Amino acid sequence: MASFKPTKVQFLPKLGEKVTEDTLYWKNYKSPVQIKEFGAVTKIDFSPLAPHNYAVTASTRIHVYGLHSQEPIRSFTRFRDTAYGGSFRGDGKLLVAGSEEGLIRLFDICGRVALRQFTGHSKAVHVTSFLSDGFRVVSGSDDLTCRVWDVPSAVELSSITEHTDYIRALAPSKLNPDLFVTGSYDHTVKVFDMRSGSSVMTMQHGHPVECVLLYPSEALLVSTGGRYVKIWDLLKGGQELVSLKNHHKTVTCACLSSVGNKLLTGSLDRHVKVYNSSYKVVHNFDCDASILSMAVAPDDEVVAVGMTNGVLSVRHRKHKKDKETLTSRRRRGPSYRVFVKGKNFVPRQDDFLVSKPVKQYLRKYDKQLKSFEVSKALDTALQMWTRTSKPEVTVAVIIELNRRGTLKNALAGRNEESLTKILNFLLKHIFDPRFSRPLLTVGDIVLDLYRQVLHQSPVVERQLQRLMEVLGREAELQQELLQVLGILDTLFASLTPRKEVLWEEHCPMSLNNHCVSVSSVSADVCRI
Image (cartoon, rainbow, N blue to C red; front, side, top):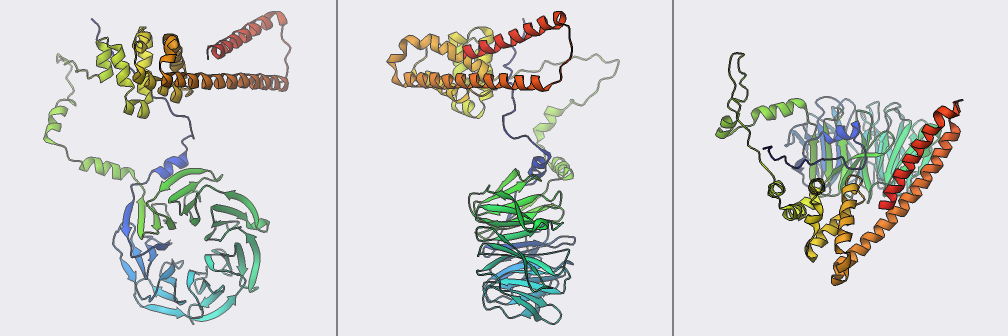
């Protein structure tokens, strides 16, 4: 007697976006490590040189962390009030930061005391950075001015007042030491040239600007503010190329990855979105609180996100050697040796091998099918967790019942509650291309069985009426799609070059094929 074959569940891919290399690349990060700071994390900046330590500005302190350390390896605490905008110099040896009191401090990364202190701003300084020559510092303040400072002499070189509101974004050029870009709450983004002492280009963002960012080629500029992320072409005089609106709240920060220069944006809606080269979202990181700052390590090994609740979230990239180490370190229980004993034994050529039959473990619905309890098997497949999380299992049981010819028996004799479950499952999945064929069969049988008793249950009657309505709309849609398909076939036929063929030899065969395809499509639509 043949052994019972379990129900074969076919898992088909869901309809949706295709899995690309970018998606796989950004999914390859570990679970985040969370570090608690003393206040909201307003700035994160990675050192451009190895080992790529990163500075975290929060409250009245700036902490410097190693890539894999959860405790700061260096702290700068000489701030009387809130510190802002801590950023490294190009060689990673100096660090500059502004403060709520209007002072700008310059630190040696190996020391604790400020090497220089720049005074001149009358209000809080939220953004500071080194120019690409490394000997000048530029700052933006709430007193509406941008100032450039000389590092060796601690003297103010220039002061520019063109913005009419707080300056909260700054990006220096890495190719030209005299250029830098600022963004302000007056909704403008300006490009300044120190040689002329004024702005050379102005873009209207339309919302208070929170962050500006230059691509490595410096032909493109990114500005964020409100719910919008805008890309500008500087080679065309600041022409707007793309306007993105993928966040639900204000976009507060943006950065670029080292591999492929992919754009990442963070928002108050607690999401970090990753864009590909055509500015389509390919991945999404979820955080626990609103995001204020973000940075990616120069080799994409670490993604650090700062939030309003004072938590620093750090994600590290996965590596194959980490997986191998984890597998080798995994401890096995004493019973594991019993189950694997002899599995790797290879018999010799002269040995007589006696195989032990492997015990077959069946699911609950398979046991019921084996006992010919078809109604109970269908009820098991229609349980809440199965029909919501794994509808493939429910459909596989339906297909098996139909193959055995017992589907009608399984659907018959049901009360209002069990019939409602079946109708709800039909309404949810009948238009899914993966399940439409077997579920249409179920719908036909249900209508045949319960047409005479519809009036006895208003709930079932309402669901069947709804099912008939959606099936009617789907049939009309299929009819329209067939008409569109016919129009497209005509267009494609008119565009293809014609070849001389013998009418007697080729035409009858093509006509027969066409008639068969049309008749099959018509039969499917009529059945729906």
